[in-house]
Image (cartoon, rainbow, N blue to C red; front, top):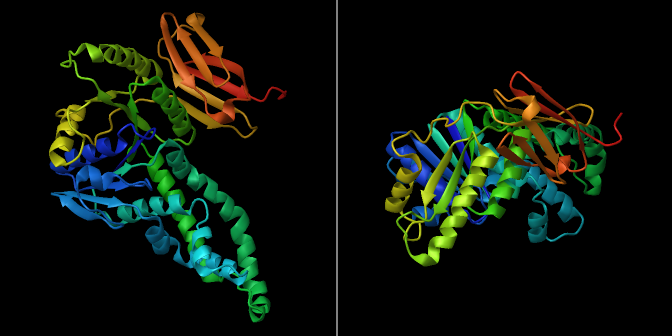
Length: 391
């Protein structure tokens, strides 16, 4: 199963791009599913089809699904959720309030990921395309499997002890501890999240594609997304620039906008090369319905396979070391170290090699750290980030 995840700042047109890609894949013969994980769903509007919490067919070879939080939690986390609700109701909380506050942070994202595991196991689809929520929520979703390890290492052993020794004593007093079967179910779910994380990090299976508009603010946020995706080891194979004003538009009113977009296209190349850049124009009509989505798919991919991995090489990577330092590496083939200049700002790095410049926006975790060491070896630049007081 091939997995494509489209992410980016809210309002850039991720849903249209994901839907257009899905339609293109379906029409090339792939059994395709497009999923929206955004709580403010618009995938059904884009496809002009009523969607639900389970996949429904919208065209030949194409199914679509809008993740429903409650439905998904009941499906995958039901036993654990019931236990949490019972704790609140025992403390006097009304049932309907207990249902609301018992949605623990992470359960929503976890339910979305578990759908992927189900589809991979039953081999129902050849391509699954995820129309992800805006950037912050998507990064929280993708980092969830790492956060889940805390539950495995800390919470579950305590819960098992409570189930064995506390439950028989506490139950006569109206207090229910989690039973072992519930905890085993939760442990299995967290194990499944780790499997999904491995699938999303496998570049032979999955690709992240970042959708931008030719606007500086959007590009800057997407840079942070790119670095963070590298931190978690998720492969990015393309940047999609949406809503470019076509060259055929000659009205003087749009000339300033076209010039700004041209400059920002140069900025996109500066920030993300050698990733390929796919482009889609600003269409004359509001994007919606299969004919317009088909037109967008043609603009994005031409005659190429939209499910193919669009970039095979290594891009920048960010690794956390055991001593609370980080190592940022990026390929710089044929670079001369005598011609490399590095400037560190508060939240970004500017790397210059002769007349060429690369701007790298850093994730928040690196802001208080210093570049302790820079090394160019075998065409790869490695930067070591360390706390200022680290000896």
